[in-house]
Amino acid sequence: MSLKGRSLIAPLDFSVAEMEGLFEIAEKIMTDPTRYADVCKGQLLATLFYEPSTRTRFSFEAAMLRLGGQIIGFSEPNSSAVSKGESIADTIRTIECYADIAVMRHPKEGAATVAAANASFPVINAGDGGHHHPTQTLTDLLTIRLQNGHLDNFTVGMCGDLKFGRTVHSLISALLRYSGIRFILISPEELKIPAYVSEELKGADYIETQNLTEVMPQLDVLYMTRVQRERFFNEEDYVKLKDRYILDNAKLAGAKENLMILHPLPRVNEIAAEVDKDPRAMYFKQAKNGMYIRMALIMALLGAKDD
Image (cartoon, rainbow, N blue to C red; front, side, top):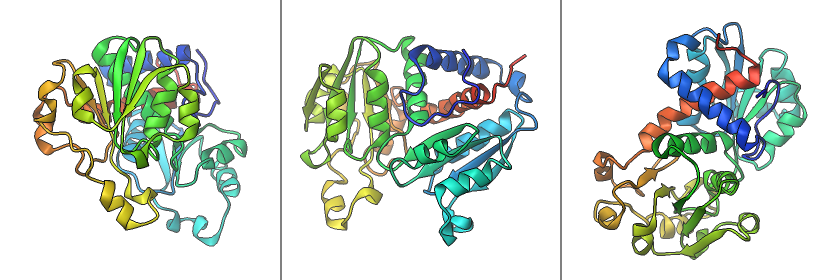
C-alpha cells in the first residue's frame, strides 16, 4: 500500500484495501506507540481551521507531535490573511511553501476540494460544511473494527441530525462498500438524510423512522449525533428539534448487551451523562482512536516508515 503524496477529501478516496492498511498501522501504533516517536521528525503539519474544533484539531496536532513532527497553522480564520479576503487557493499555495502536509476544516462544502486542486502536497479534509468528514469516518470504522473484529454483517442505527450531519453522510458512504450492513435512519422529518445520500442508498438495506425506542432491540451499533445549531438559519427551528432524541438508561433497557454506542462529539443533550458509565458507551474511546488513525494517515501520506 502506498498513499504517499495523496490527499483525503471524501470517504471513498481510498479503497477498502487501502483503508484496511491504515487500520493495521493504527493498531500497531496502539500496541507500541514509542516505536513511532520519530518517524515524522523534521516534517511540518499545517492546521487550517476555519471552524471551531476540539477533537479533530487536537487529535491531528497530538498525532503529528507524537510522530515527532511539528505544527503550524491557525484555529480560527480571523488570525490569518483570510480576514483580509485571501482565497482558499492562495492560502493553500502559500502554506505549501512552509509545510509538508495540511489539514483543513471549512464551513463551506467543497472547500477542501478546491484546496487539494491547488496544492502539490497532501491535503486532508477535516470537515467541509454539511458534506463530508472522512477522518471521522476512519475513526468510526476503526472503533467498530476493534470491537467487533470485522466491518460487515451488522445493523447500524443513525440517530439525530441526518440532514446536516457530515459524519453520518461519510459513514454511510464508507459502510456501503461492506457486505451485510443494514441501516436504520432515525430522525425527525425535518432532518432526514439529503437527496444525494438517498441516491447512494438505493438498493441498500435501510429503513427510515422517527422512533428510536421501537428499533433499539435491532441495533448492533447506535450512532448518535447532535442537532447542529450552526447549520440552522433561525433559532426557532433549532429549539424545536434540538431535544427530539435523548439517549438515557431507560431507552437502553431494550438494547442488545453488545450494542456499541458511538458519537462523533461534541454532544449537547442527546446522550445523558448517566450513559457514560455503561460499558456499551464507546464515544470517548472513539475520540482516542481518532488520534491513532490520524497518526497512521499522516504517516501514510508522507511516506513515513516505521522501521
